[in-house]
Length: 204
Image 1 (cartoon, rainbow, N blue to C red):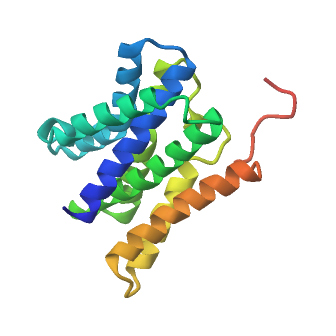
Image 2 (cartoon, one colour):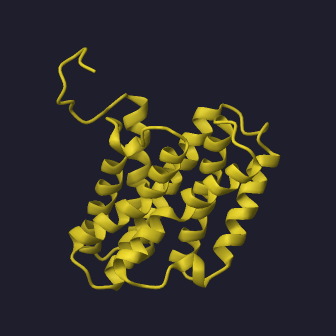
């Protein structure tokens, strides 16, 4: 099993749990919970694969469908064990965007695309499942708010290509770059860092 398949599966698990937690917070029924878990997990990757005109991964490999179902079932059964809802959702969402950023970038590299396009694909893979999740749950997607979210993915992508210029082992390039996404996101939330606002204070 390749490193990127493992990362893709782990990202799928993280986003499936993130989707379940969001859906339960909105008190959706069982069907709604599984739908949100599914679109959160595969939404970004599906859009990425459509743009690349390649086979959509989860349609070719049923492992993803099984993993989403099992992860969602786990989250539902142990929902009372997942204490501190906000913290748990944030954790799984952050892990998910880090893992999927790396997967998207690697897809672009395999297609021999320009690094900027690869970073865009990584960011899209990481963020657009969450965008679909939030829209279906009647929330303004995080990526469109002031919070540093997509920016963390972009910084991780830049780090990936900078490390590629070194003699570092490819596995460490992925691990360090993914960690950059996680650390930037955590620090941004902990210290309430955000992108500059174009609106005057008090303006709606």
